[in-house]
Length: 359
Image (cartoon, rainbow, N blue to C red; front, side):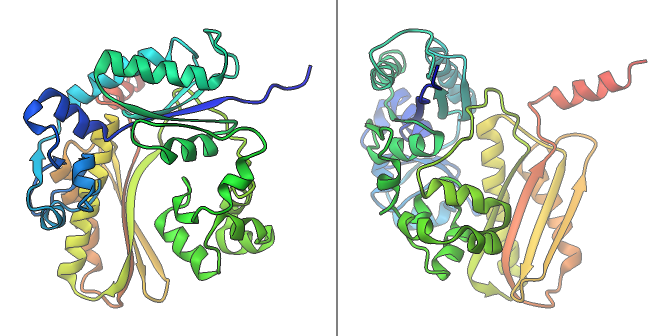
């Protein structure tokens, strides 16, 4: 028998944290809402669509968000509430397939090539899932349907919010061709800038660029980039895939010379990393700082702890401790990154350590 064409659905909740807050507090409906803390080192964890109209985005420093939208309402995150809603949503997914790969509390891939419940099509399943989510939670979700993960995620972004889009077999390459490479999942801002510098601006440009050239500039990732430009992505949907690290880095538009600027940038990165940890209910034991100078020389410094980092302040102290010995700056800095590895759920690492001490 021929191998069946894969059927992948990507479900992405619309402005999830902010939508939960607006649902639970009717006074917030229709208002620009940011989930986060409005303080010097605060960062926006999520923004409602009303706030996004002003340019407010997740991972944006809170003070910048306030300047963009003076009427912005900040709401402290309630991760227990978000996890409870996420559990409801994942229970809906489980009706249709055991092959569920969560990316975070608010999005996941589903492989429904062989669904548990027979329906007319993958599109019908996606519509049924969206309707069930709205019925049970009062929240909207966007869905993308296609024959691989890369295209399914592109499709779910195409009709947000509260939309459904399908990229059928044979149409992937044409759909990808006009899109900017910065819109591709797996191509971060720094990589997109490097591609742009090489004259690669769209999927069509990426497709016509030779694989050897891509390997020269992007190493092992080149094969993935070359494939997605042709609408090809053979990665499986991996249930319970363990996350190895969480990190954020930024390439500055202008190289940094002042220590105070570097410390401020590091504080913003730490806030973003910790927000990502809370979103996934994870923490880790090893903190790593990456620093790249204007001449592209790079330094990394790491510190491991006996127990997982317990809060944002502890993560900030650890990162600052790694940066301090590198000061004063000998050369300008073009990139700074902070990451956390040795990840596990709360209590998981301690339980593992105790088991290792058993005779």
